[in-house]
Each structure stands twice: as structure tokens, then as C-alpha cells.
Figure 1 (cartoon, rainbow, N blue to C red):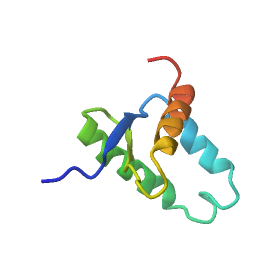
Figure 2 (cartoon, helix red, strand yellow):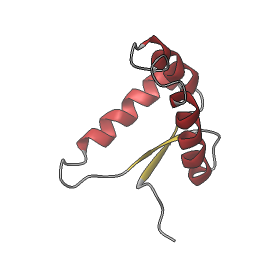
Figure 3 (cartoon, rainbow, N blue to C red):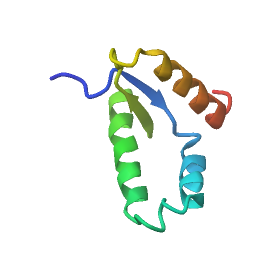
Length: 83
């Protein structure tokens, strides 16, 4: 079967920070309490593909170019800290 994602990035170390950031948004968990649960499930699913606990999955887009994917990966590395 075909993989769901073109690229998968391990976000296990920085995931807690992402959840905390979500809690800071007015439109985040206060408005949609199930969002944290859905976010955790999505990251666990991508983690299964990457053989890690939690991961962020990316699909390369030829419509908008692929540059955004590389920049977002850099952001996650900054959030997660050194490997």
C-alpha cells in the first residue's frame, strides 16, 4: 500500500511545546477541546510510519513548490532542540 506521507519528521521531543502553544491560542483548545486528542492521534499515526513515538507527516506539493516543507522541518528541529 502507498504511504500516507512523503516525508516524516520525528517531533517526539518538541511535541509538548506544540501542545502548550496550542493552549495559548484563543481558538485552540478552549474552542475545540478534542483538538489535542486528534492532534496526538495524528502524530502517533505518522510516528508509526517513522518508527518513532510521535512524528509530523508532510506531503510534497508540486502546486506550491517543495521549499515550504524544508523550512518547516527546520522549525521543528529548532523546537525539538539538538538530536
